Amino acid sequence: MVFGLGVIWFALTGSAVAGSIPDELRRLEKCHGLFVGERISKSSSLYAAVSTGATSGTDACMALLDRARLGPDGRIPSVNGIPDQTGHRILANLVEFHRSQLESPDFNAASGGARLREMDLFDANEPAFHFVYSLLMPNEPYSNVVKRAHGIRAIRYTSRSTPRTRRVVDLGAIAYSQGPGPTPDPWNPTLIDTGKIAGLVPDSVQNPIQKLETGNAQYQGRNTNAHFGAGFLGSQAYMLATWNGSNFRNWAKDLMADALCKDIPVLRSIDVLQAVKTDSSFAWRQGISCMQCHETMDPLSAAMRTQGLIRASPVNEVRFWVSRPIDRPSAPYPSMSPDPDYARRPPDFSLKYRSFDGTLVELPGTGITALGQALAERDDLYVCAAKRYFQLLTGIETDMRDDSDPLNPLNLSPSETKYRNRVIELGRQLKQDQSARELFKRIISSPTFIYPDRGI
Ligand code: HEC
Image (cartoon, rainbow, N blue to C red; front, side, top):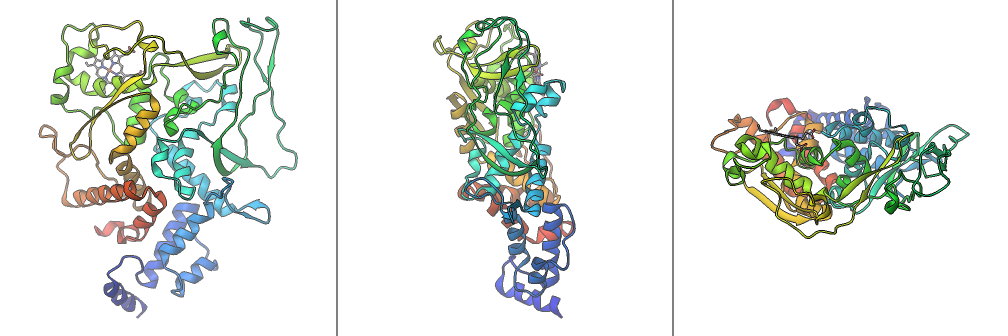
């Protein structure tokens, strides 16, 4: 009976927002499982509101998500002075989801797990925080994941009555360029919080350092917690995680995946023919297939060329990024042989790839902030977000590769094409309204959310 009425109502309104009560309950049960990680209690007030028809499943799901909404102080709501436990779990699960989506590793793992002091200074989850902040902070545009001019820091809490004592970082006995000489020298920076996550805030921590390894005197007093712009891309944690020890190729490769959901190669062979130089001294310049990757990755990594990794101590491995001076003029990207002044020139880059619809994108600029702006201009950033959230919420994977390369046809089935088109539409809506929360709502209110196996 109820089901029949629901179908009629559904047909009359022509809207996917509210269906039958069993369907709406199914919606709530599903989003509760996804967000909180457990079944919803049938005695909860949300369950009651949906089972009586007072609230739609979608509205109930959004009310649930809002338990992790960040207030003006960056904190999730509290109950009796303690962070709401459901809100905490939703926030922690969303951080974990974004962490798992990133191509770049945890920087602690990337550095062999031995960087104990860096672990105290930088949060390996910071790249994930940038995405979650755009989802849970009201009116925060999605594009800020690659445009924010500051880092994001977690607010954490612990139920222990005595808070953890702050460890002082012992820089060890090293020969300093200035200072007291080879005696242990304590440094007292602000460490990251430990405990359960209870919010996210713009990171304004300044951790200037005076003592540096010999040869780095010019960086004395630099903020070891500096952020270089472009949201997650310019965070100390992301730069450490993607560092390969010599250049920013990994950073560029990983950002294509992490910001745009694109795995190189993302250029067609015809796109790179002009760039191939058989008499170049670079091995990768000589081959078409090599350049299909390198022509995206190498000119993109050039945006980071002035960044340098400084070591405060070889003993406890405190490394951090600084911007090095630019004291050479711009020059064309080296194609024939190495340029000894490369890292001293302005960080001119080019963002080059084929979009999901086959458009050849080629956006030049200078510096990481300009790169963030270039990324935010294209649809791919938003289509990538839609692809991720569509998969999180419906379990349906979509193929968003270039679909009009005559040499590499995708051959998608009609249903794959349908979901791909849905994701493109959702991505374009996100670009328009910049609201990741609305994107969640659109997916949750769709029939696909509750019946992903019905091909609807
Ligand atoms: C699928 C993408 C891809 C293709 C195709 C590719 N490369 Fe690479 N190449 C990479 C990545 C990613 C790195 C950086 C890896 C790292 O730093 O750990 C790299 C690094 C290199 C390096 C090291 C350069 C340096 O200065 O450190 C050389 C040399 C190289 N590639 C040569 C080639 C050649 C030659 C070809 C063609 C035969 C080729 N690559 C094809 C992705 C690719």
